[in-house]
Image 1 (spheres, rainbow, N blue to C red):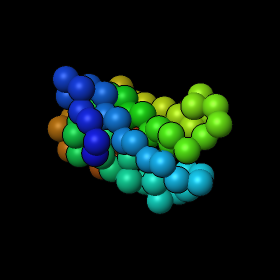
Image 2: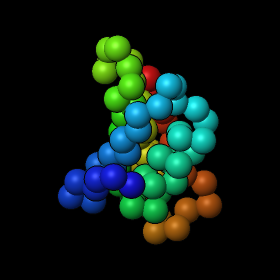
Image 3: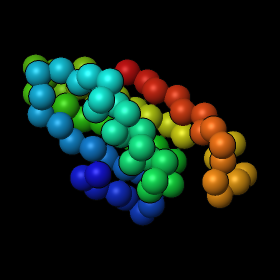
Image 4: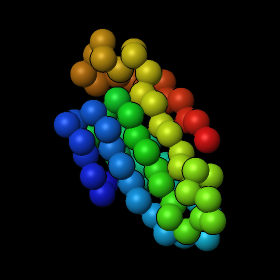
Length: 77
């Protein structure tokens, strides 16, 4: 985890040829462990930075329990 903003937004920064499933799984884990509402996985090795951003949103069901069995995670981008 590179940055956690007010325990609400987790930011993970990469500079790789392309993001893969391992990077995404790592970011999802950081969102869960940090109990953040939103995660941003940013790859700076892109011609257009917008294409290098993955947004990870933790579902509202997580807020109802401290340790849920399954966290609904939505990934955009």
